[in-house]
Length: 117
Image (cartoon, rainbow, N blue to C red):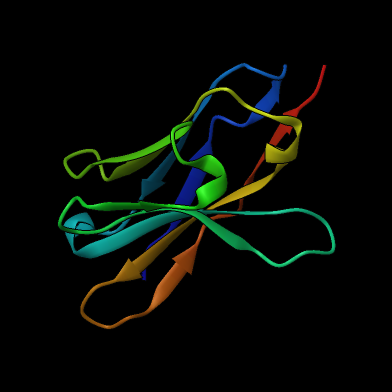
């Protein structure tokens, strides 16, 4: 099991940028597929972006071309660079780590992103 801590959320105007970070306490970060999810009140938690152990990535259609997920295995950190933010990007963003060998996933505590003028 790993412990995940997100940071980087906040209030930003439409069109602005934020970079979220998620640091893992796991000893072997490279065996985890990492993902960012987001959730608004009363809705399900939806995947935003995924980066696999291979380095390949997937994005939700709504964020393609605006968001970039990356990872630094040496720092045990995954990032989400969010550009051209829209009010509909407002949500709590969660980091998820899925162990490639066991399939077990872990969640961070979430970080609030608010896009508003």
